[in-house]
Image 1 (cartoon, helix red, strand yellow):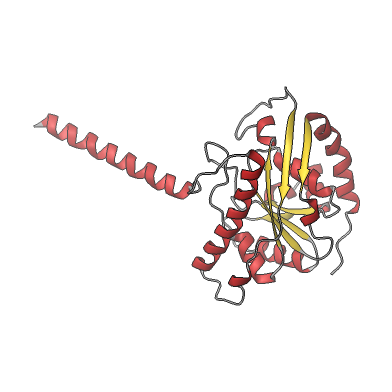
Image 2 (image 1 turned 180 degrees about the horizontal axis):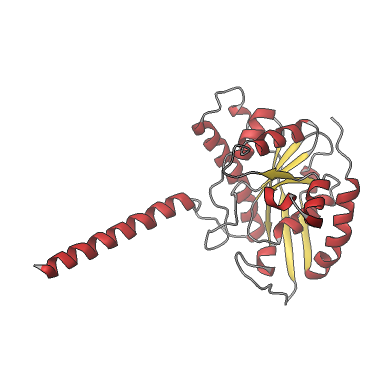
Length: 258
């Protein structure tokens, strides 16, 4: 299927965003040959800065295959930002509502129309203390297995040095370098035509995240932790510690009372 044209809104957004990006960050961009020239596909990208969607979109815009990001539905509603989000074909995500599955259906439709859908499988900025990818959510794997489209793993590093996760002020000097490395498609063929169970989706997601992490290891010249940071496990451990602390406090008070 032929690729969708970039269109007015994406070109207009590029006119606004590219000049400051060029000024603020240098570029070390590799792997563009792995971005499919035609047909629908997914890119699965790590997320470590509020700036990196813009920096990564710049990278992929230069390949000629613009990404359609999944973004919070509230961004689509009003004003210039809403018009730009709608005009550039981004996909609204309605969390905790009856429309929660609409983003999944829209992503499948976009891929089947021959477009690129960009996923941040982690679902949010990484909370790993050293910036490595966390465990992923299963949305990208679900769309990939439903459509059997190519999944291109992409690692990026450097936007987080310009604006670290959850930081309020950018660190402008010295000028940072945005490193991007896109890899060959992840082989998910062993998951095709099987029941799309939670276990299957989890396993396919782990394969995708491992590919992203390996690319980031190449960029950083370092080894990632053997076990990815899992926010759910951390929350459970924190609750357990809090419960144990509260229990110890109650026991201490009861002991003092006797």
